[in-house]
Image 1: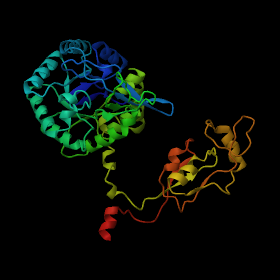
Image 2: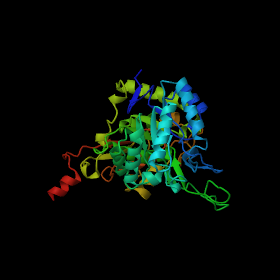
Image 3: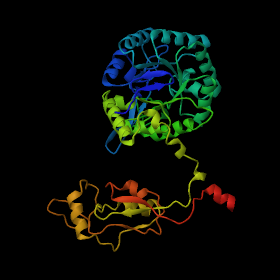
Image 4: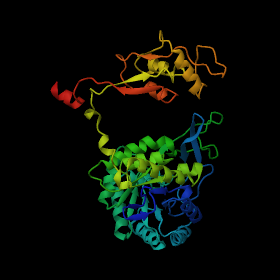
Amino acid sequence: MADLTTNFAGIRCPNPFWLASGPPTNTGDQVMRAFDAGWGGAVWKTIGDPIVNTTSRYSSVDWNNQRMMGLNNIELISDRSIEVNLREIGEVKKRYPKHAVIASLMVESKRETWQDIVKRAEDAGADGLELNFGCPHGMSERGMGAAVGQVPDYTCMITEWVKEAARTPVLVKLTPNITDIRTVARAAKRGGADGLSAINTINSITGIDLDTLTPRPNVGGLSSHGGYCGPAVKPIALHMVQQIASDPEVGIPISGIGGITGWREAAEFFLLGCGTVQVCTAAMHYGYRIVEDMIDGLSHWMDEKGFANLASFRGLSIPRVTEWKHLDLNHHIVARIHAEKCIGCDLCYIACWDGAHQCIHREGYAKPEAAVAATRASIAVTPIAKLDSHAGPDGITPPERIPHVDEDECVGCNLCWLVCPVPGSITMEKVETGKPFESWEQRAART
């Protein structure tokens, strides 16, 4: 098995899978149960002066019968006292000395207040500190959270205060609610941060109840913008992580957060330079034991690829992201539809004609009888199919005609491949143009 042991900014743990600061890390009992399930570390639910939360506090976006594609919350930091939280951190570290326990902290913007809580958290046994400069609601209205993380000078200043007192590694948790996340990442680096956590939640209103006309979650007839997380935010998180990881002015470890539900998403974050990943929404949705599949899946994938440890593939995808002006304008692919797998649903035809480049046609291309038989034998999904021939004895109706692609007109946009419900029915294949590599930048310089 691949070696998943991790040293992140000086914080050692059995594997790179951490629970993110939030409801799953609210108590010592929860964190200990998570460690029993296999998590390598946990970032404690943010500690500060206790607050009073509202009810209700969560809402979600569901899509295509998938619950919680995106989760919105207006929950704030810990509503339990600093003393209770620190006592439980100490208990967890005594029982699980090899696991990482990171204290997430948020207090008012005063040097003495920050340095006091830093010393108390470290004395309790925390392996590291995460400065919560990202909370987008509630705390930011009190001059904390994103109100700090959106101002680089504040981020640098408070990080400096913390580093004056800290004996353990200091991570800065970044807000995505900013024009360019790199500006704050650089500020954290200037302040002495040992690492970054990215990203925190995104400002959002997930929906409105069309009966009451009140946005969700409903708190006595009113609502508020909240923090958006879950699978829907992964593309945004990956973008911002790549921006930070590729910035030569940053150059410190990154703990990736945002939409991680399994080992595949985790691998994507590692490939863009992360040293650990943090998970919250998926643990809230499915429970702590999801980490078992994360560990097994990542280990097997690493073995298949020949990666002995995380360092073997960390950041390998960073050089493959570039500005648009550097892409090859002479690279050309086309869509090809495979008769033996097509179910005749016409989604590719409709998408191409109404939303793309009108290169897919359905007239005059009869599907061979052998392909019809193969489709009937193999097809597993039929609800959306719009079929032209009579159903077979098994109730499945293979199409007699399938769409075909005019390759001279195909621009290789991928839309037909993306909407096709049958894996392998459409493939995107490279066509040799006989032309050398040429970017827009090169073409512009030549002309």
